[in-house]
Amino acid sequence: MPITLRTASTLTQFLIEQRRRFPDARGEFNALILDAAMACKAIAKSVAYGALTDTLGNHEEEEGGSINVQGETQKKLDVLSNDLFIRRSEWGGHLAGMVSEEMEGPYSIPSHLPRGKYLLAFDPLDGSSNIDINVSVGSIFSVLRAPSHVAEGAPLSATDFLQPGTEQVAAGYALYGPSTMLVLSVGTGVHGFTLDPVMGEFMLTHPDLRVPDDTQEFAINASNARFWEAPVKRYVDECLAGKTGPRGKDFNMRWIASMVADAHRILMRGGVFLYPRDTKDPSKPGRLRLLYEANPVGFIIEQAGGRASTGRKPVLRVQPSSLHQRVGLVFGSKNEVERIERYHAEPSKAEAEAPLFAERSLFRC
Ligand SMILES: O=P(O)(O)OC[C@H]1O[C@](O)(COP(=O)(O)O)[C@@H](O)[C@@H]1O
Ligand SMILES: [Mg+2]
Ligand SMILES: [Mg+2]
Image 1 (cartoon, rainbow, N blue to C red):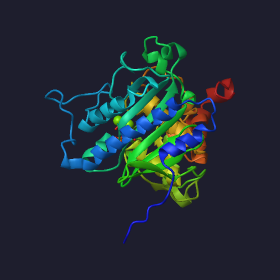
Image 2 (image 1 turned 90 degrees about the vertical axis):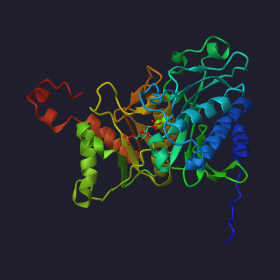
Image 3 (image 1 turned 60 degrees about the vertical axis):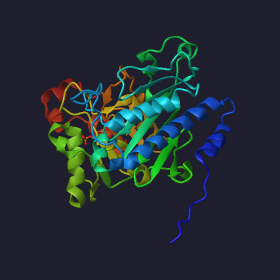
């Protein structure tokens, strides 16, 4: 049967159209997004070749493999994807610097290249534990404005990236699944593009994505249940209790272990994702990284009418204190995320029953 392709605008046409709404905007911003998209296309190609090329498995810088700043073993594709993001983006004259999951410090645009006014934070390959088993992975990125002193030439430092998620001017992710998609927000809603593998173009196939307010599907790594805090345990227990429990409805559960893929499912049909703060490792307040995982996904989900939170406050309002800071993250359908926030705000049963609680009313205001 012949394949009928949908006719749609390309990413370039979409960006030009968006720019018309912002008369002050210059071409740098569009060029930045197109360079990030180009990096994603190159990564998609490497991912698609799978075991046909030598790109699977661990990166072997030294005999024992290489470990990134997070203390995690790097896959060959982690390193390759990081390199592709840097090489595709550093020439454009739109960036002052980049940070990545795979680099300890910020990457400053070399002095022989033109320096621009934006900063890029990215996770070049998200869900890398899925690479060797041929399950969907992705890339995710966040765009910030460089502080004026940096755009004017002062040396770049880590502090320049420590801006809350509310300051993002754009965020996007690429999903390397059965088809490759780029999902993007430049602050005017969320739009999905599918890569035409023959033309090599991202085509607008999913304009104006919206996350439904309600859902009956949640996503959490249940192997961490013994480390969860009481509000998360309560929420999951209530979902599991189904129709006869307090929620009065059955829930489904999904976990891909690739946040980009889980976020994409939630954008497509609703749901709630939790990687909450837990007690597994007290030195890490959560698993996901604020600057290049939680913030861009939070921006996209909120632009699509959903909600993104630490469980206690909107994740986009967290003031970062370090480049690779981790954070508890809950995002997805608005009413579920608000419910989880309510559970965090309410005192636990034990607290409410304690005599000090009633008398001194420390927790009552
Ligand atoms: O191994 P777990 O606990 O299921 O964690 C999976 C989570 O870790 C991540 O893979 C972290 O991303 P990286 O692969 O970029 O380190 C998320 O994408 C995912 O949600
Ligand atoms: Mg990741
Ligand atoms: Mg990664």
